[in-house]
Length: 69
Image 1: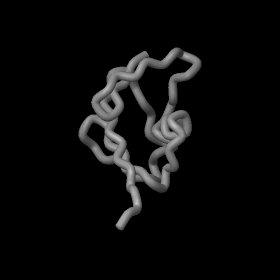
Image 2: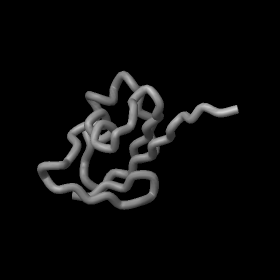
Image 3: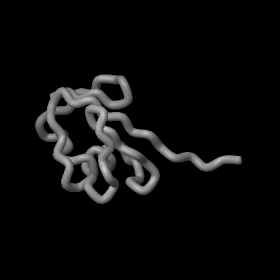
Image 4: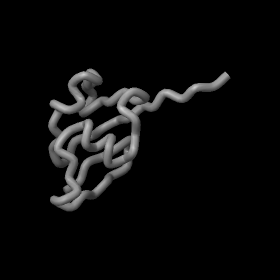
């Protein structure tokens, strides 16, 4: 099962497949509070990460906030 994350194809086995955006972020070890997610050009509200299902072939962009000066 394949999805595209930030322009790179990522393959998952059926056992690894993240059912939601929240599970994908957990799998990638990304803090939900520090990321904006976009699926197929549509921004996903952070409060909807757990309810937003993923499907094979989707394109996902994850943009992380980084502090700096």
